[in-house]
Image (cartoon, rainbow, N blue to C red; front, top):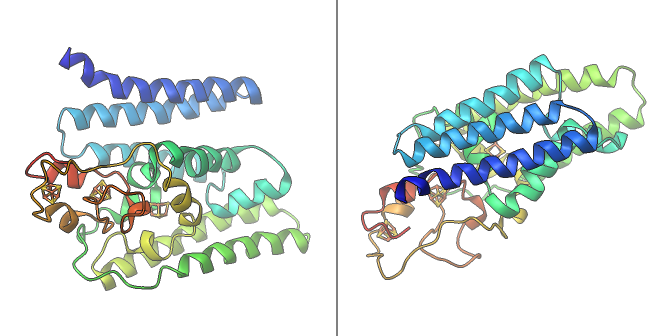
Length: 275
Ligand code: SF4
Ligand code: SF4
Ligand code: SF4
């Protein structure tokens, strides 16, 4: 029975993604969606199975499988701008394709179920940032997360300006915007990580996508909770959390609650299995 339990969660995840894959394939009459969502579902299921077998790098495996697929295959080879600019672009053209579907599934509807799981297991920016040595923040959190509203607004202004000025070859511009935007993100992410001694500083202060992710993940179905009867208040979970979440507080309003990326570091390190 225990053996079957091990396969239940990966199987459920795979089924959810396969249902999405088949639905979009038939709705959009495009077999790409079948391949795309099947690949993501299989990658996630492999990662969860590895995690259940206590493989230390299970999350890294998923990050690389999905992150590299999105960055190299969808972004560079298929020329899809999967960043926020791509979302605005497809939204303005009124097309429910590529980036709009990606945002609808991963950044808007998805977080209602799996919170910021995207940030822990699929984001190609964090995929590299997580390789830096500052895995646990050692300095107090800065009061500068307003910057994400600035980057969000700049992204919207940039794409609006392209449409209003009626420039030609906008698809090509979006492709280069994807490459330059990613390079800027990596540069800013690495610089901030070194300055603040925190791999996830970019996620906390700069990333414009959190403007969508944070409010949606407030209502997340899947979240880490604490069994107060087991907890001995040792503080280890809060110390190890890369996102400074007060995970022993079970309320939805807990400190930095909408920043949880479901990385499971707190769960793996709790000496009392209270999480
Ligand atoms: S906050 Fe932004 S950069 Fe960080 S993991 Fe999430 S989407 Fe990626
Ligand atoms: S690590 Fe476990 S026991 Fe310690 S404070 Fe966190 S939940 Fe409680
Ligand atoms: S350590 Fe725990 S609370 Fe912190 S981000 Fe990871 S899963 Fe969430």
